[in-house]
Image 1: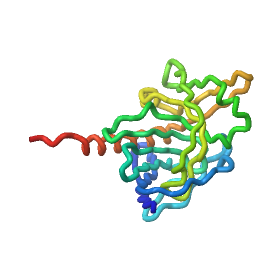
Image 2: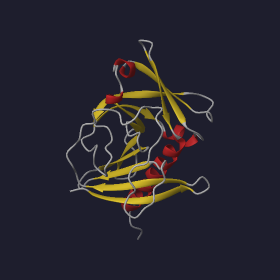
Image 3: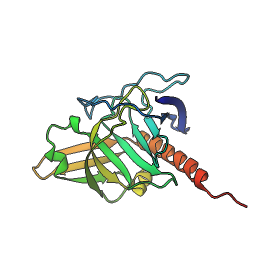
Image 4: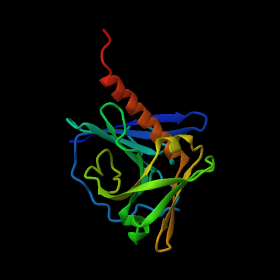
Length: 218
């Protein structure tokens, strides 16, 4: 059984940005997403209000998925109405990340797979002087894609590794350009509010896991 505990998390008081954090313990059968929930240029729409919390229309959603006897936890973040695109990471018990963060894109949002699998991925930010080449990590399936709330993340995704320092040093949204060898090009935008919300939850989980594994002082 899955127990979801929605919380309202204020991230930047000056900008009044909020996020909804959902902590999941347990498991649930996977659900296959048959299509993208919105196009890349669609306006952000609000999800249903969580119990006991007022969620702003543009509040990012960040899910922490932890399971009994599992050595890792997954953290997934996206914007309401745009679950086809987001950020995710896998964290060990000591708070360290397995690889880097990952930008993910639903395979069901793409009509031509070769435009993503045989392509160069570059991340741009106005606050960064140089583009960052991202390493494509292939296609994977998430059997826990519907754990943690009413909104599913994609069951099958393309993903590329995006370094921690690049996300943290970017002071605005990050645009990822995917240039395929067949000449096609796609632009994916990770909005600043999603990046800030996602990293805040990552840092919180890191702090909890590190304190839990820290040796007791004698």
